Structure formats: C-alpha cells, structure tokens
Image (cartoon, rainbow, N blue to C red; front, side):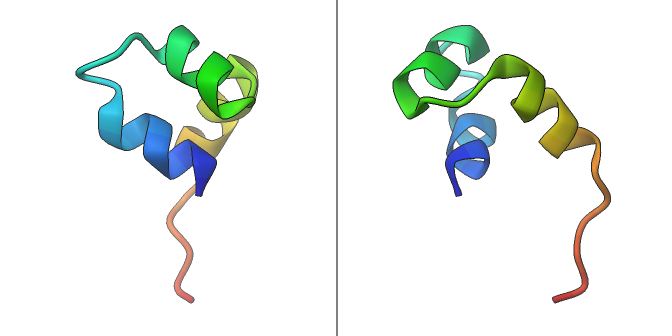
Amino acid sequence: MRFAFVEEHRTEIPVNRLCEIMDVSPRGNRAWRSRPLSDS
C-alpha cells in the first residue's frame, strides 16, 4: 500500500521525498514498480 501511494503521488512530490515520508526505500519502490501485476 505504501508503494502504491508513492506511485499515485510521484508527479506531485519527488519520489525520494515520498519514500522518506512513507518510510520505504527508493530501491524497494523501484523493485515494486518492476514486478508484474498480480492476478489476485
């Protein structure tokens, strides 16, 4: 859910700042974005 929030707001706020606010790593965010969507 945190990464989805970052993705949703990435055009308004820099990703590094969003990751800091949401307490996630930018590397984790990139990994999340590269994964295929789940069927469930």
